[in-house]
Image (cartoon, rainbow, N blue to C red; front, side, top):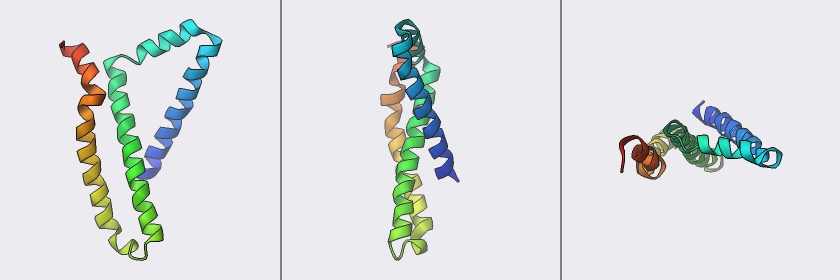
Length: 110
């Protein structure tokens, strides 16, 4: 279920990204305003959520491939899921500073 939810969330992000990028051709001033909103701490949290969704979707996709194409995959799918979750948690912990560092500096100062 989480794989499908993250896939839908990523799709909606890509849809919005295409729309806001296309805005530059219509009104460069409006595009600049939209891009300025992306520098807020709330959007940084959403960006961290996007990283979480993409990373989980990618790692779980590799697990799904292993389950489908490895003869022992179905037998080990639960262990592979917990491995995916563990790797995801470690990588997300490592992504906190790069993704949220700017927002923390804005909120709490350098």
